[in-house]
Image 1 (cartoon, rainbow, N blue to C red):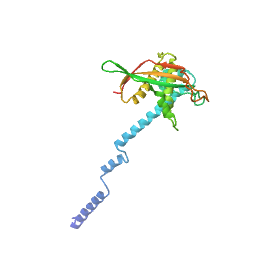
Image 2 (image 1 turned 90 degrees about the vertical axis):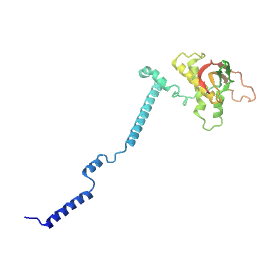
Image 3 (image 1 turned 120 degrees about the vertical axis):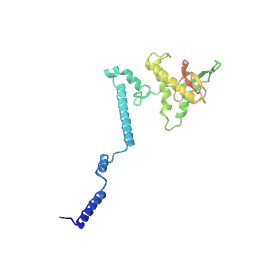
Image 4 (image 1 turned 60 degrees about the horizontal axis):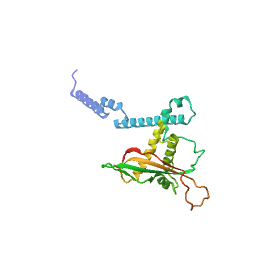
Length: 246
């Protein structure tokens, strides 16, 4: 049977309507698939930042765990593990993380100590220039006096460095152990940094310490009396330091 013109026209209009519905329904199937691959997926920069943050947190946790274990081995009674890894434990703990029980059984100093320092520098003509003595302990005392919240560094850094030096060296200034060498370097660096901070940029290559020990006056002693004679006046050798003030 021959199709009339009206039937052909109806089919064309039906095809147009189907195409219109497809175009209104959204993007092509391929485009929909691409959008469904990564819904809500963060950009590359955000993923990199998150990975870096996770790495930093992991390293901090590992460092904290190692620190706790090494400090525990340091304060725990002697055992095979602490003896086997004594060098690693001491290398981590001293001198910054030293532990003691003086908070519960304080042992106040019965002496006042003046820790003095002077420096030496050899100029281009070969002459040696030596500075006057500088009182390192007086700087700490001035920072503590009349201070409601004095710094732990001002109270203990220099004092503990010196007492640790005496414990490892005794009356001699020759280091006979690795810890003695470390504490000697520690005390030397403290003195050099303190002098450099108050030296107005003056250069020096050597530093020397002098420790004057005075007994604490008895309670109720008249203030007008002169202080007693020093019980000890110890002069340490010249130590070579990294050039300061240049």
